[in-house]
Image (tube, helix red, strand yellow):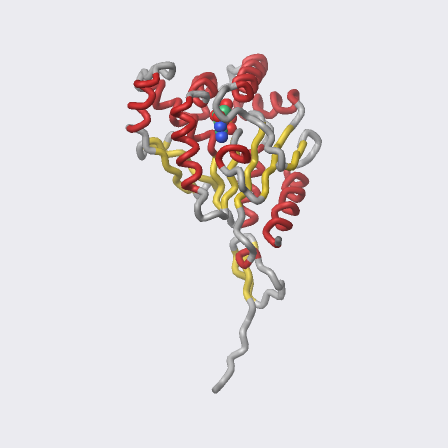
Length: 254
Ligand code: DC
């Protein structure tokens, strides 16, 4: 029988490299769940997106799901303090993600409508923490998020991902940053879309959401006991990515 030489190939940044001599390529490593929790605007989504890209994992922005539910409630005049109205409305909501090549991440679909831009509006930001505190909204969100994680290989960011959604995740990161740095970052982001916005409005909104997110009754924002803290106040995007990638690869090799 004739034996053919086998050329090892491996996946680096989504490109198959022939003749690669690495013993363990990323796709041969254990698939894990990575959770990133923390306060609003501390850079979780940026890091989650970067990690997902490097590891060839799926990035899921759980906050976008609560934002889409909030948008639906606002448009349809649903009173989120009324249990029956909320329960009925949730049966009419279908959430999905659609990969967007130009941004390199997924857009939020609400009943098949792309609402990615609309859910980032200040009006939605003003109400999302109240909506996300509702017990039925949380049960709905958590169930959908858990379904998305059944095949592993995901990076999900939010507030309760390491505590409630995936308490057994292999790698849990709790991201923090100095409050002034967070306000500055959010202001820059919002100012590009709305030049009338003031830094005070952004600061008030962040403080209000921090308070509501950490003091609500159902799955409040908490650092999981086994989460690693990553303070990125003085780190560049590249530096924080390298730190997190190191932790991820360690877990993928265990
Ligand atoms: O990450 P973000 O700022 O887009 O999240 C919007 C809001 O959604 C946030 O104020 C709190 C809520 N949220 C939540 O309660 N649980 C999550 N897992 C993610 C977000």
